[in-house]
Amino acid sequence: MIAVLPGDGIGPEVIREAVAGMDAAACALGLELTFEQFPCGAAQYQRTGRQWSRGALRACRRAEAVLFGAVGLPGVTLDDGRAAGADVLFGLRQGLYANVRPVKLMPGVRPLLGGRPSAVRPEDVNLVVVRENTEGLYAPFAPLLPKGPEARDVRTITLSASRRIIRHAFSLAAARNKRVTCVDKSNLLAGCVLFSQAFQDIATRHPQVKTDHLFIDAAMPALLRNPAAYDVLVTTNLFGDILSDLASVLGGGLGTAPSANLGTKRGMFEPVHGSAPDIAGKDTANPVGAVLSGAMLLEWLSRKGEWRYQVAGSLLEQAVRDVTSRGICTPDIGGTARCSEVGAAIVESVAANAKKMRDAR
Ligand code: ATP
Image (cartoon, rainbow, N blue to C red):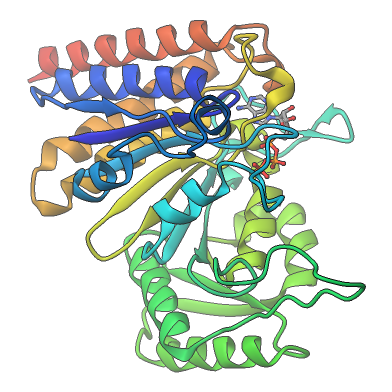
């Protein structure tokens, strides 16, 4: 069973298209997926006084994987002033130590820089930001509201969590272009010194993988100037959040960016964007980030040896490519199509490509 949590704002619109695409790709390979939907987030809190629906967290724990939309609505807060919905995200991510955020530029998508299409080409953008997901400044145990005229955020970086995420980055790079860049601020921050030492140590055990190192401030412009130079970038929690949002510009913007949160046994997949309440309910949200998160989920299901999940994931990603290259895009990436039209075109393309695959056999 795949637990589906559409959440708030544009979450339900984009997740609907992701589920339709995943279902079409799985069916084309003779696989049967079962989806169970659970309301959660700020709207759920407004309706019921609880951020989770009954049994949802338990169902997510026993599900094969979780597909999540986004949570949060302006002005909807808990009694203690924190944003309603955030606990859902923290709850789901608990124990999922690797936040994996690929950035690819799909054909037909022209990233906007300064309001104009940039000259960056699809073949130049194929990188992954691997972000430590359990500690650093976003650790759930960090105090969330200032209690007085001074506020302190505690940033804990441990050797064990650093080693775990860096190992993950190296194993990912081994299956890709064999290059890992460590991004930190080890010229100033003690936690980053630890992170960077762990990186150097693990790098010596992977001589087949090329490595380099960038300080976070230098990494931002370097990535925009020459994305083709990067394959896997590994970093701590907050830096990873910022770096991947910036990198998503290279793929056409937040609406196009997928992500996975992975632990040793569980996986939760979600578009990088938030609930974007300004465009919710208008059928203009870009479903590509959510659909590509669904493709990542399918590929992840193949880890136990069922190769058809891998093919289903590739089929879904190829369908997104076909659709964007035909100019069927939402307004955020320069098109005029509606969210539902992009989703329907993706499903059609999955079916057409699956037929071609069968005819070629
Ligand atoms: P969060 O902090 O919850 O991650 P955020 O502050 O990063 O959220 P988003 O909700 O992701 O903000 O959205 C920022 C803006 O980007 C939105 O107001 C919206 O205009 C645009 N945007 C985000 N996602 C999409 C999408 N899928 N399609 C089109 N535009 C989007």
